[in-house]
Length: 433
Image (tube, rainbow, N blue to C red; front, side, top):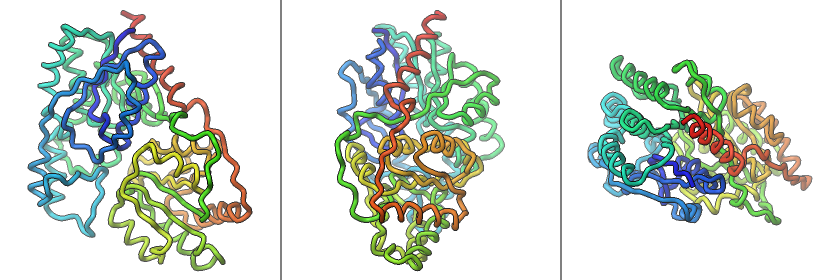
């Protein structure tokens, strides 16, 4: 088989959303004649561990791990955290007001650790991989970010070895939703954008996960960008009968940070608890993942404490049956300057479950288009409390009638089919050689 070197920060046993995309690609690439060679840190600062993901590593996969030095020990000491504490992803705050030290640390992160805190791995990795590839050649290099330091390793390899290189942007760089929160100086902003343009210009192919994000990258580099979305793995889902939840269960999986926490959703539920007969006793909201302190405040102010259960983390292999048993799956989009481009990775596993989806976010964004295409949910504006209330009430009435039809997920979003699309991109680069 041909070999593809995949440079990624996230790899099992690390858990979380960042692992899924290339773990699943590498699982199905051998079926298309490509042997994955994974280059990843041996000691990453991952938000969670999930050993259940190890079973998805294809036996043909070669995994090369090297130590990484990151400034998180200093960061934890500065904030008064214990060394074993994990760093929350996505600006999740567990205090009511951001501390001065937290604000300072974010400013340092954005202005000194460019493009990110993994920048100290760029030089050592580039030097090591040059030696490694001399004895273990590959046909193509893939980098996936964030963290975008992985792309800078690819840039260094491209300059030295001129091996075809694919830069995969799971999330944007200068257009990422929290970019404005980094409080960048003009110098840092220019530095970020200059590095971003160098990567986009030097890579042989660039991949984005959605149409709007692809257009954004195309406008920066003035070049075409491929689109390969995230997806779902059919093998993760039980094809037999799953016992439905007895209660009217609304499930959210993943981190619920401040930007993703929409007060109108909680107020709509509060109105139904107060005014709809039987709703309070039937309702069960399950939040699986870490939550910002603002979530607790909204739950409390809307009188929903008795209806909400919170679970810090569930291993990935236990998530599908939870989704399949749910009555309604909740999909909040980040309320940030560019929400129309955001496609949460969970949307595809939501689709695979066959259960209805309620999204709150831009009604004309990429996520809304996916829901419309799938015919398995609706997107209601962030602040449309009445629209959210009516949507939830409609799903509740179906629950009371015992209606639980399963909507098949679009085959285009299966991991196997998406890997076929990826293999076509890789093959096109080989043909050019």
